[in-house]
Image (cartoon, one colour):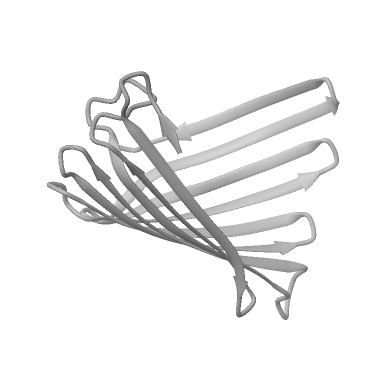
Length: 168
């Protein structure tokens, strides 16, 4: 529970449990219309989310993880955003491959659907990352390519080279 300088209030409740092998978290935050912790012109008044996470041992590779998130947000002006996210990641030794599917509905905007495929490889003091995000809806097209090389010769020195490209 919180109260800002103008007497506006907010409350949040979070519950966590393991249900049928899934680490589960449910959170719900309520705020009065004018409660704000930032300079937002349209503050969130309701923020509800359900997170599910499960580690699995796959038939091939070392380990894998499945995560899902469902969220609902309402703002003081009545705008709503509903989002569903599904992620699968799979480790093969030093290589990790992950895929994230995102579906989003927002008041007054076209529904959005996208998919991100990413790879990460650790080799000694190097970390290599790369991937692509593909929009499925409203337009089917590649939205973003990304890559990164990270070199950490010591705990106090780190170098990054990143390339990020959005085709349109």
